[in-house]
Structures are given as structure tokens and as C-alpha cells.
Image (tube, rainbow, N blue to C red; front, side, top):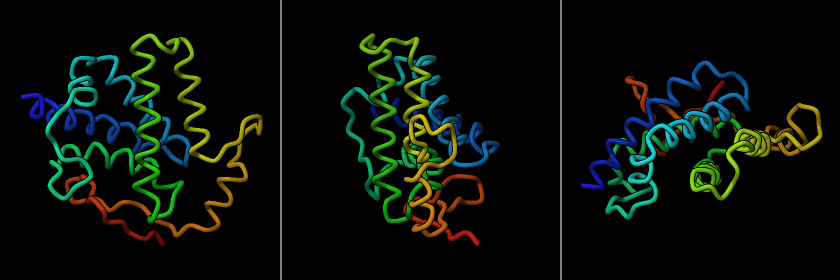
Length: 173
């Protein structure tokens, strides 16, 4: 039962960032859009969020038999992280981004981090992934420029209905 709820919840969660980040340009905007929609989902649907991400469920993650809604939800995170990574590092970096986002959201919801500073923490997370250095006043920062110089232009491939194709990327010209 919890597994079915988690699968349905992931389908809902995947739709929200898909609607938020297509309009977001650049590197930082899609990442921030995903963090905001993820956090809003957790606040708006706390019992469902807990069933999806804090309860023990018998679902395969990161495996060929992973249900499509789970792959789609992860794929939306992947789509936001893709501009700051290489194809080779896309999966692990997206997992790291998700783990940080999940940790911040869970600790804030549990009262262990003050809610009034949550947006600031999300901004710091996004800035680090986007390559912006603290106090730089904007721009990519050295980390982002170096990553941009060495990576192939890559983005995850989408199916005709807008879903992400797991494990497949498409070169951009």
C-alpha cells in the first residue's frame, strides 16, 4: 500500500517542476525552480511526502525496474542539474543535489532548522551547484566556468509526451 502511494506521489511531484522550470532560463533559475516546487510539495502534502521519502517502501530505485513515476520525478531533478554537469557525472551529481535538498526540507519540516532561513539555505544550495561563489556578487564563479569549459554540452532526452528518457542524453549543438 505504501509503495502504491509513493508511486502516485512521485507522479504528482514530477508534474510540478516540469511546469516550473521550462520557463526558467540559464543555470540558476531551473535549479531554484525545482527547489521551490520540491519544498512547496513537502509543505503542502506532508503525509504523502513522508510516505514517498521517509517510510520504508519496497520499491527499486536507480534500477531498470524502477517504476516510471519515480524515474520521472528524478528526471525532473536531472533536467535542472544537467546544465552544470557532464553526462558522466549527471546521475551522481543529481543524487547529491536531491540528498541535500531532501535533507534541508526534512530538517526544516521537523523543526531542526529554522523555517525563516529556508529560502536562504535553498539559495546557497543552488548557488553552489550553479558555480556561484559566496560574495562574488553574481556570475558563474570559477567552479562554474571550469565546468563549462570541460563539459560536453549535454541534456537529458525527452520522450514525445515530455517525460525524460532514463539514462539517455542528447548532445546540444
